[in-house]
Image (tube, rainbow, N blue to C red):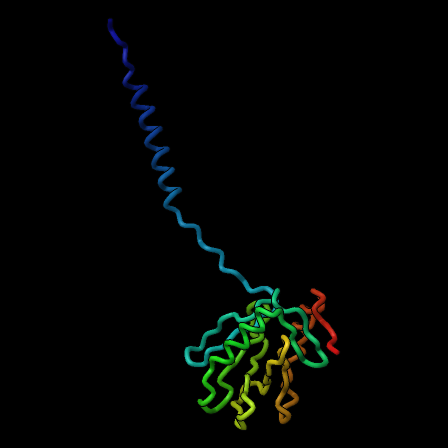
Length: 173
């Protein structure tokens, strides 16, 4: 019994299989670039003065609303607690104050900075003169230094438009 073996056919199938295996290994080794999230909407970001970086404390979906007459953000409970705890971690002995600064940003673009100044402090760093306080149950109240009313960014039109579009402009009692 004589077997007729077609070596050309076997060599061709081997090449095709080898090319397919190389292609599969190539696809498996490709790393997909992770999507860098853009922080859409308004975010409150902790500004670390020592290393000049920010990290998000409050995401836009955690902002329940903003009262543009009282200059007050209403946050969901988890975000408010996270912010309150971060403020509590700060050592308020390094003058000049404020030691704790948040950036109010829209779509990752800084609109203004606000500093937390403890009640026992009488010195204020020349920030934008916007200060904030945290109040129960879940409020962040923004105030401006009485000396510089012309730099009042609290109702920046870009922020108000974003809030209005998403029905987050509210009136507090």
